[in-house]
Amino acid sequence: MYAMLCTRPDICYSVGIVSRYQSNPGCDHWTAIKNILKYLRRTKDYMLVYGSKDLILTGYTDSDFQTNKYARKSTSGSVFTLNGGAVVWRSIKQSCIADSTIEAEYVAACEAAKEAVWLKKFLTDLEIVPNMHLSITLYCDNSGAVANSREPRSHKRGKHIERNYHLIREIVHQGEVVVTNISSEQNMADPFTKALTAKVFESHLYGLGLHSL
Image (cartoon, rainbow, N blue to C red; front, side, top):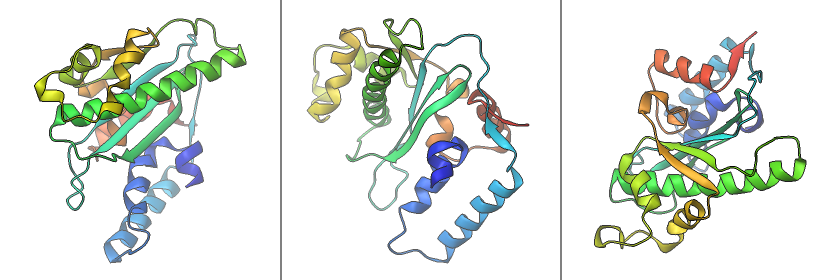
């Protein structure tokens, strides 16, 4: 759990999934845990490396859609990078049941936007990162969710979305965050919501600043 939270964002999704079954684990869950441990042993030299020239805080958000076959809930994933490496990341089951991929992505974007506001205040107080008065770019790979975050008015198709998730519109309106569309291939939050092929997974690790030295 310490590695997942502090040094190894690459196992955040897998550890989050198996931790949902702590109260009643089975043989399949134990096999999954052993696979995670084998992966950690094989990649024990991996570490987060920060070396970019630009001290710019950038966020990425993503969501799957109802992959939890029992609760029918989606998984939100987000990651923020600074100086070429990941500084904050999360993979968490959403508290509500989304009716569409747009809604699931919108909920994930709202959670990431609130995290961005907190990070902005924290880094501003530290006074070590310049340009924190500028808006934080939050990348999302769902154009519908991006458009919905900028829309000041509610429509019939979005009335069922819980009111507290519309906070992202206020955050965007205040200029704290700018939600921008990005392709799924370039979305660094992708590994926090779903299992990926080895090639795609490794390319995302490089983008997160996780290298073997």
